[in-house]
Length: 261
Image (cartoon, rainbow, N blue to C red; front, side):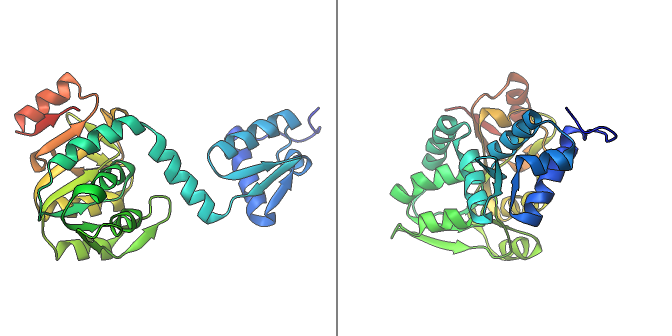
């Protein structure tokens, strides 16, 4: 039974309160969370399960502990990498065929581009300029790839560099092709990202490359993410799964090649 004289918090408010407690204490008990949120033990267990699923805490017997920052970042990237895994591999296989020996290639960060890098480490011979630290680390294992890492502010959840320093560094360079991962593509709104700073990095890559190739899994099709990276007039090819009829028609009008693995 809930404590009398106090109002229960809304779900979003409970989540904030739990995360605040963890930040302060490093660990919490079910009783502490129940008292802080005026929620039943069953509700608290559901909230903890919700947060654990998203990699924000680790449940223990009778409570929960905070997740280390490094572990949280790795789990977040792994979770995104596993989403549409088969589609990303198919898209990466086609994209790898577009790269020629001796090319200089821009790669932004993202799980679709990481899947491409996994192909490139075995077969590509050329130069890669990337904002993805994990991509650079992977390609460094190849003796045939010259890797240039773009500096800037590091976003831990994607292992990518962002910000004005990254965009400025890219603007001083030139590539034969920019291969860009994104958070959404639509017929009318172009290629889009959920993050303004990520969009700026990808846009600068496109502006300083002879060709631009966009990669997308089916979950990105007709998803209007927060900010535009580029319009279709700046793109040479979309390699994606689940390209809709309207999107294909729009691409044709802008002379963009639409390729579905």
